[in-house]
Structure formats: structure tokens, C-alpha cells
Amino acid sequence: MIRLKSLLEQIDGIFPSDDIIDKPGYGESGYEGIDKTPYKDYNIYNVFISGIESDISSAAQASAFKRGYTPQTDAKNEVILETFSKYDIAGITKFFEDPPGTIGKIVLFSAGCNLADMIINLLGPTYAGKIYCVEPWASDTNKSNWTSIPAGNFYVHPTSWHRGAGATDGSMNFTPAKQGHLANLTWAVQQIFS
Image (tube, rainbow, N blue to C red):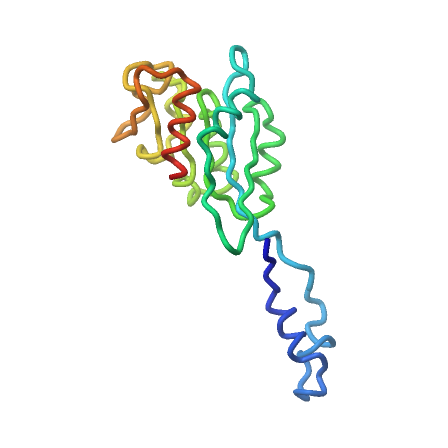
């Protein structure tokens, strides 16, 4: 991973002292009161949040996600995958309140999709386009949990409400009808990260 120097480090390297320029504010003696510690990591974080674990463990869901996951590489930044269980509300909240780097794509699976609007409230509305919902458990009563997510960011089963059919209005992506829930997660992740 290549770390970029901050502008202050670059200037200090060129002008090691104020004597060279004969002006205060340049070189190591300048910038008093300014924190010269490096900025947050330049890492890009893709995030996966699993659904209910009564039938399929969070680890099994993360494994299905990883089978389809091929992160796009970035020459300047390390791309890191963070995974959470939908039940780890404290960990999810802490991560999104103060992200350790740039947030890439956020994939929510099954009942994990119910956290969509909560995440947008933590990150801000500009992140709605980075959130993808894969086969959310949908009904007329829980559509309100993802009102800000664009319809094109949904990957839903064509007929089963339990796997996202009718989850939102607009043009959604349909998962293969004859595949299982985890197989469709892997398939959708391949589409999202292609």
C-alpha cells in the first residue's frame, strides 16, 4: 500500500527551515497549532452486513458474500472488507459514525436490509447510492426501512416476498428464481462488484 504524504509533510521536505524563504509559516517552525499527524487512512472500506442468523449463521452468509466478491483494485488505496452481523448494532454504529477511511460499497443481505435508513442517518444522504439490498425480507409494513435506497440498488427474487419481491417501487434487479438465498447473495455480489 502506498501512503500519500500530506501537503504539510511535502512542504516541510522542500523547505526545512524559514531561513530559505525568509518568511514565517514555512518549514518546520511554521504551522504552529496545526496538527501535522497524518490524515485518516486512505483505505477504501466495502461493508457487508448479514441478516437473521436463525437458519444461516453470519459466518455462512459472509462466506457466500466472499465467493462473489472481487474488490476493484486501487493503485493508491488498500481496499478492505468489513463484515458485520445485523445484530451488532453498536459495532455498526461506531464504524459508520467515524469511518476509518473512505466508504466504498455497502451490501445489506436479507433482514440486514432493515438497517439501510439507519446507516444513511449515520453517514448522510449522499451515501444512499452506495448501499445495495440483496433479497430483503419485504412486506408492506417494512418498506419504510429503506426509503432512500435507489430501486436500481435492489437485487430481489422475482416472486417471493420473503426474498424481496415488491420491496420498493421502480426498476429492480431480479435474482435467479431457481437459486437459493445464499446462492443469490453470491450472484448479486458478483453483479455489484463487476
